[in-house]
Image (spheres, helix red, strand yellow):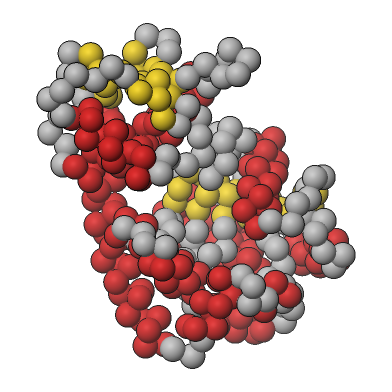
Length: 341
């Protein structure tokens, strides 16, 4: 287990952040991270986010703080000052607050307590949504912070991604640590709760999903290595404003993925444009026909002498996305994909 922490955090500078909600997964992560940090002489800092959406949240944060005090781990409760009762917005706020707090302490790794149960749930949810094999590979052990630009320089790591929730709860019980059950985890209005109930007690199904995901993870790593090599060899900075891409020779699916990734970077967006928008653009760019230019995801797209040029589209106030930040993000993703993190 300690090997996962070494692999994911060994090169990280500054204190390692731990996201702790008070649930069993995150508290087990805290315990295991403490064991690792003590053994490796590393510094931890724990963050709990109070979204101010439930009156119990403040007490839950104090419960986490008391456990951190027992371990001698610095703890900070971060408060969302503009709460909105919507999961996607709450998730973004949570990651933004933790990334900024970690950066203020000069940290670069944030540990998340996702487990193998979460992986199975994610697989079924994405399958229902029609995800490709790339998405079905599930959450990655190491990834860039999902928020931008607040997450600049921060990577999220999932060292207990292969661990089972029941096993982690047994660990906490053995150490006499009480976890908190979030009532939203029992609300069938949420798709993840419905999927969790479907998986409950079906160990055979979970085993098959995880075996499938393991194979897909391997293919995804290979795909990202190839995209990282393409980024290193076939993408160049174009003046001060953007990037020049050589898309020749890329197979169609990789071309679409690489183009979507570059549009995300140049446009300063948190996710790539939708695949059904990137696909026809990629086809037009590779067709032997005139291309007069296009815009997608806040990016101006031109083709010149066989290469594709991308630059940020000026905003409403005449300001384009920050090109310096785009270069930083490009370098971070390239390093992640080539395994240089």
